[in-house]
Amino acid sequence: MFDFVNAPLPIRGDIPATLRNEWGHLAAPGATLSSRERIAVAAVSRSSVDGGGVPASGLDPSIDDLATTLMADPGAVDEALVRSTAAAVGDPTTVEVIGIVSRLSAVDGFHMALAVPIEALPDPVEGDPTRDITPDLKRRRTHVPMPPGPIPVSLDLAPSEGIAMEDLAGPLYMTYSDMAHDDFARSPGLNRSQMELISSRTSHRNGCFY
Amino acid sequence: MLRGSSIAFGYELDIRAIADDRFHSGVPGGDVILPFVDAVMTGTASDQRLARNAIVDALGPESLVDAAGVFANFQMMNRVAEGTGIPVPGAAIERESEMVEALGLNSFYKH
Image 1 (cartoon, rainbow over the protein chains, first blue to last red):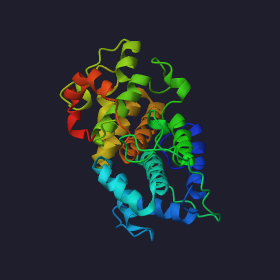
Image 2: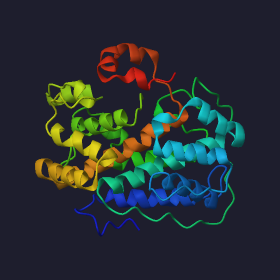
Image 3: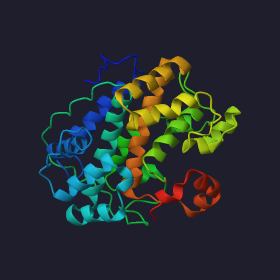
Image 4: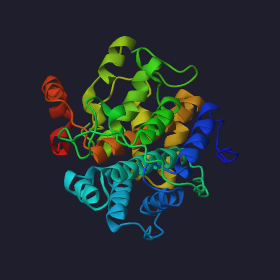
């Protein structure tokens, strides 16, 4: 799994380990969804961009709407769409879906960028949802409840989703320690300006203001 | 952040290059980095192969892996931002009004 034997060039060692870790996150029971349900969300969101048609996840249709739109056209996601999902299935499940789809877009995006076949979704495992949900959060002119602060806290309603996001971000982009240095550079590799050129263009093409 | 790092490296950044290919970013390798993102997001398999090869030739194979990683990370971050609706502080928008205008970002703003 994530061995990149067909990759056109060597892959930095921390990346395969990080992606395997993410598959573990995806397959584990979440705050509100079982392993099987989480993988169903991933499958329906992935199918929205692979041209193979979109099977229903078997979950509430509002989950499928959010998962497919967020994967295929993130700039089209608005408060009405997210709030309709939250009204149907609750804020914690909505945050969990956002976390699953967002991280899958990173995992699959890395493969696509290198023309490597995407990895099969993990097999489900047994276990009940953890119900690890942060209490007393509120919307702050945001689509979902969250504490005040920048993007790393935005999934804190379901803390395991935020942790999984941060686990991916360091190896793929920069760690918080790296970010402290405007002149950070991987050697060999890209420097920070070159990385931020990529991040800016990606965000612009996704229609993302943030 | 791009502005800060460009200053740190002594580059003369032209932020307009993010949105408009008529401008040069001023960042070394920008002429292969920006097309790489476009090719991955909307290009054909041939476009993507050419874009990957251009990065390897200009910046080295490790840079292509880095580029794929950063692209992947911001595919994720954009979706977290859009899904959660995390707001951009008004003060930041005001401070960066010139950039917002230059990149046509007002059309992306939903709050």
